[in-house]
Amino acid sequence: MVGIAGGAPNKEHDIRLGDVVISTPGRGTGGVYYYTLGRNKQNQVLEPTKSLNSPPDALLYATQQLNTRHKLSGHHIEETIERLKSNSRLEKDLRKPGSDVLFQPWYLHSDQDIDCEQLGCFSHERVVQRPERDSKDDIPAIHYGIVASGEQLMMNAEERDRLSAEKGLLCFEMEAAGLMDLLPSLVIRGICDYSDLHKNYDWQGYAAAAAAAYAKELLELLAPFGAPVSDVDTRAISLWLSSFGHLQQQQLELAEAWKGTCNSFLSCPEFLDWKEREQRILYCNGVPGCGKTVRCSVAMDSIRRSSDPSSVGVFIIYCKSARPETSSLEHIAFGLISQLLQTNPRVLNANLKSLHREHYQRNLKPTFEEATEILNTGLGAFKEVFIALDGLDELESAKKGISTEDYRRMAVKFLTNLKCNPQVLVTSRSIPSIDALFLIQASMLVPAPPSHLQAVS
Image 1 (cartoon, rainbow, N blue to C red):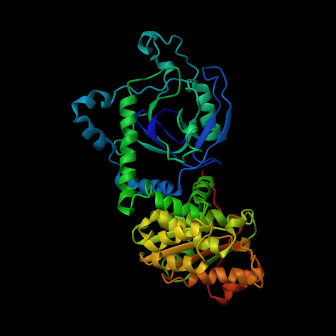
Image 2: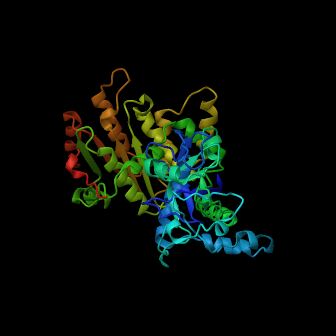
Image 3: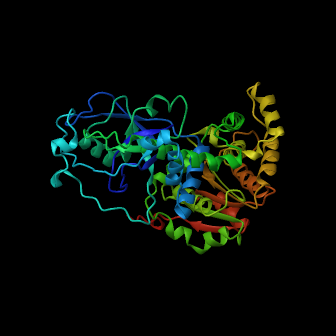
């Protein structure tokens, strides 16, 4: 969903007019936060209600890759807008205005029929003093975070700041709330005003063009891999195989991690040896709540960000006893195939389409053997493969004649026996039978005490 919104600058995000905001899961939301309609004028109160569905995993992965690319080499938003302006019909609407003023939240624009200049809004004490942006910064800036959506326009600067501080909201708009639960989408918004009574129509054209230019780069990134956004077969088969969003869950874990979390783990010799393929398996154990899942999520994210996605496959599987559908060998296999489809749709071959047609009508899924064959074919496209299995202790056997202990051993054997010879990271509570399994396999054993997590503000 591409359009415009009112910005909500805060301490972490120096949002300016013309910047772009991308909806990203965090703070217990899927990236879009819905607030109730009605009382939106200054000195009245808005009541937030609920969060909405997250964007599809494929889009979250793509935005992560695009964010990495932008950090390394910058974006092309300004260049795209300049090309659009070559059309004389668009030049006037897309021209970048010169004035960008953020007013103090307590100062009201008292008469909507009179513009800011006539009312004297620009006096020094009524304006927030902000430094000029560094010439080395990307302009416009791109911000990833939570988008607020409601049924009426936000025109309340004090309430804007309160919700931004409490919920981490970056902008306010009016369209996503009606669509996200029906059609999960990525929200891309260009900032055209500051959600206050000082309405600014001058920036709407440029802001809309900036959002569209970001969307263009995102689609270009997806296109070489088969454009999964528009590939109905890919989405349908991915959801058929696994309704649990592993990439989405990883984004939620990353959003909850404090800045600097796990730095010591990422630099420890055991992790570095495993990352450089000196050791095949890395095992992290510890008591509940010590940060195993966060470290696993951050570690796989760091590998993904530093790798070429066309040659290095990075996958993560979360096992959760509270979600029985995630606690089986089949779930591990299906979850890996689902991520493959979202990040590298070329694995969608005729055999997989045929299996989908054959089983879907009968409400069945592939057998474990069929899934293994699909995985071996799909993962063979990568030069290197990294797979994380978070929560081995939450994997339970529901099969007659197979103990849970043996079932967990089978899960590790399944991953290590894949033909691509993946690097495997496993986390678990410290359980003697699981600890012994990894000691036998001579893998690295990395305890995860609470003190290992570092919170850096």
